Amino acid sequence: MLKNSLQQTEAESGRMDQEQTNVQSKNDVIDKSIMQLHTKTKAIRDDIISHASQQKTIEKSSANLLKQTKVAYENISNKEVEIENYANEISRVRLDNLNTTTQNEVLQKKLDDLIGELKEKEADVMHVEKNIKDRLLKI
Image (tube, rainbow, N blue to C red):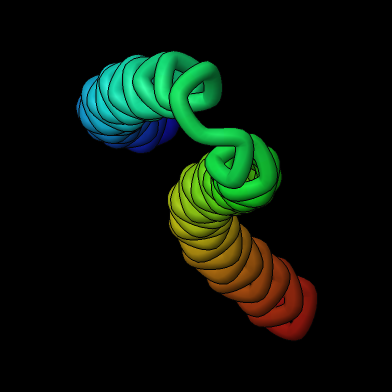
């Protein structure tokens, strides 16, 4: 019975490991896509800033506009980095939550199995004790 329980637990553990691998793989793909998008966005911003710098020699008034644009882009970039960090943290927390839930389910199943085993053994002990009492009464 314990071997059966162990086999079931190992099978469940294998399924959970596979699920964890799948979730991690999806998370890696999403993280890679986010980083690629961020790189492309940053490259586009760098091109915009470069063009604004060229206009600076033509008009003095564009210098102030360039500074304001640069500050705005830096703020946006900082906010995007913050958003990415929050998204990464949320993903980690979700993964931890999934892992914890899975582990709790496995542990609950083990507990239920052990309680069932204990009840069976208690019933056996009670049966043996009853037999002993009956024999003692016959003597």
